[in-house]
Image (cartoon, rainbow, N blue to C red):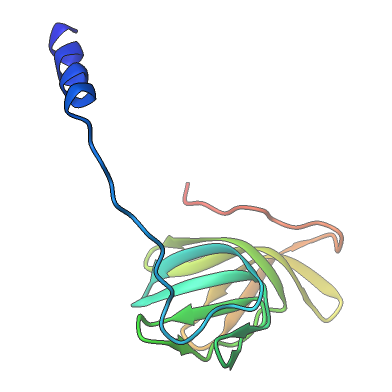
Length: 130
């Protein structure tokens, strides 16, 4: 315990300064508010309430490769969170396809697979690996 106090004291005495600032992503901004962002497959994936990412039409989901926005198939609703399991991207939210509302999606590599049927007024707010 004594060593821990000495370490904490030395940090407090010498102080640590961090210099951070926000940098815009190349290619423009999203025209709404993102809910979540995650890195997967060489992209930063964004979900939220937007319809454009830079000049790319991007309804509720967009991906950025570090240099610009990449066209991505839209979601049939809004994702509130993402997670990665077994090197695959999953999302949670509320997605209406025909008469069915789903709470989760999985990226197939070219589009979205919907699963987890829920009542139409519900949604999954988060998803995680268990």
